[in-house]
Length: 185
Image 1 (cartoon, rainbow, N blue to C red):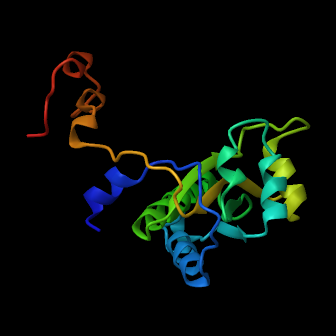
Image 2: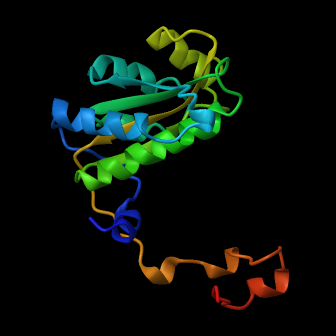
């Protein structure tokens, strides 16, 4: 798929069909995440693939809201970063997660990013809850969980008209440009 169409088509999907992903599809997703760039090429990002429904349900309870995508996802990929290896693991993990979401769309799958960093469960921080469920060492930050599966809902792709050019500034921030549709020359 052409890249501009891919980024317009990728939308957050929270309802999935009861159908498992193939090992090849999971490998494609993991490859996309692991090939994403990292600061100084330090590769501090690691992934935990979960396809066991009992474990996915436990992960759903690691946050007090916003986890509906995990109710029907056949696969969850937990994106973590080694905070001892990189001081910018959050940024690196974000790039990795984004690459996997774009690859999922390219494969005809749906995905939704479920934020864990700086979120809470009914008991404590979502990161600590995920660490307990998956036995993740303390030095790893838990950025997010990607819920992935075959789409069971249809969300219209973005259109070129959805691009809000008032959010773009050239050279410096200039508020008067925000009210005009100024395009790059």
